[in-house]
Image (cartoon, rainbow, N blue to C red; front, side, top):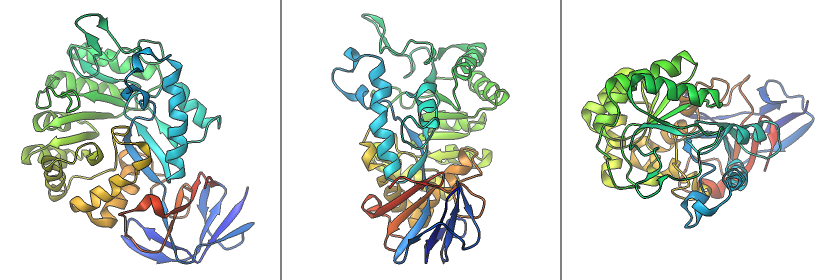
Length: 371
């Protein structure tokens, strides 16, 4: 077990929001204590931060945005994720929650070291009611998309009993999270303010997920969908482009996290929603919704969060400790003894987050250096 001393480091204490000047020891796959080491890395003039966490991405959907995606073999979806995962890890992203598209086989490939990548938490498909955005259907030809396979179960349900069955299908196929779509989609151009679940359906999703040890992340552009999801116990609201005071109050009261994904929509209403949430005390976690923009731009989301009102420290918290809290992963998200050795070394010892990708000099994931 290798011990690596990061000497003369300046590192960000994300909990306190302060830069600390001290050595940091990587002891195997965790952060240790002491100064005895097998190797030393000189970190003078550089800043250590915890590994970044993207709470909303789609690592296996890059080809879905191409013109001929319906003609691609099914294996192309998983194989297209290989360079995406490698890119994310090289930029310091050490944990991702995939918001649909990746299956349990891709997670297994990362876990066994067949491919390099961040730890991958999967949701498989986005469950929805008939006609929702997870219901890939053409009036001319019926179901479309090539997702109907055992590893990617049918996500469509109706009624509370149907909601429970949809959760069970996802869990059976290995989902870590349940992704639910309560509104339409800006990308599709329809239904962004619709509320496509009844209260009974939303409660059934949350209750069944909890019974199976899972949480529910909810795609919700409109305020009423976000409010209902939060009131019924959803763990996080995704996108939340058109939130209002009632919605953020429901989120604050119920401890619901907000993953704004500003990268996918920079419209004024979206920025206003984030400011409303911050003012209401809603916890913010970082997510990109890539590949709406390229996965190589993942760290731009941190800059956008800083600009909209979180500031540099708040944005870095959103991408580290807040994200770890959302995902219920207490072993990461900060630089402290006993925490997982997921670390990013940045050129320069300041907190400027405007060009983070250009500053990444080294990345450690589970104590192993990848860059």
